[in-house]
Length: 350
Image 1 (cartoon, rainbow, N blue to C red):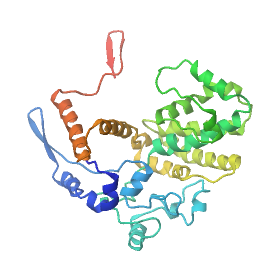
Image 2 (image 1 turned 60 degrees about the horizontal axis):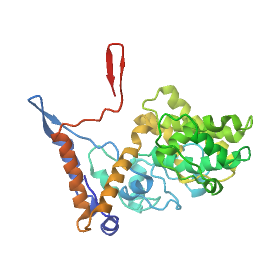
Image 3 (image 1 turned 180 degrees about the vertical axis):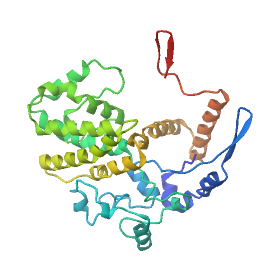
Image 4 (image 1 turned 45 degrees about the vertical axis):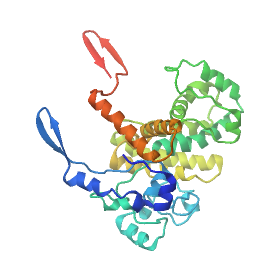
């Protein structure tokens, strides 16, 4: 585990911060020995992708950190920012690959600031081991803006008070992550909710106010498409038919968005055009989500607030994390039992 301060990273840069990348190559070639029921096994590791939000990934992978600039996408390089912000399908001719990446890296052009330090790792290249994040792209990105715009159009048929009242008295399966929508957020056309709250809200909005929506509403049709996109992006497994229809669904959604709101996309809308191909190549997008890493990050931030010293803070936070992990190993603690039930003579534990 590695933790470092942002200011240190800003001064030292990727090459001096990530000086231990060769250890990943050693894990790939030499592996580690573990004992399984008295028998020694050699386990080898491979780096498949690097998870993170867009700013974090662009920073450590050597791409531009400004999403208002041209060529800010890690996956492709559009000729102009306006073209990228109005395109509803992926352009295969403009995808980054090893050849054009090498050329642009030498020239320091097309959004590449430096050669990715992780390209030195065996079987890894930043243009092949692509990583996206449905949590930040969708739940804390597209949904925040688009659901606010959708509700802005729909509150002509009902009030925000009615919406919150229906949410309050809805038969929720759990008391957690129940959102409360503020009128100011709708007016400002950006609803700030946590990822879990937004996920719950998008999936159940139709149950909350579906009967109040005018028949044949194009705005409501846009919401239904967005709900399907979120659903597919959070699936544990996908079929070929789902993947085949996913690209068309996203394209139709973006086209309808342009038609209704008559405004260009944000960068997170653009990332959606790459989702179908990434799902086809790497599998369900849910496995790319950083939501569990964000939960771990939240705990680390809470620990940092209660510590009385700031010298070597990153070291002591890492040490605390490792001690907690060792405690779980020593106590033989696995995953906690979250659900158990019995059917006839069979017991099930999840």
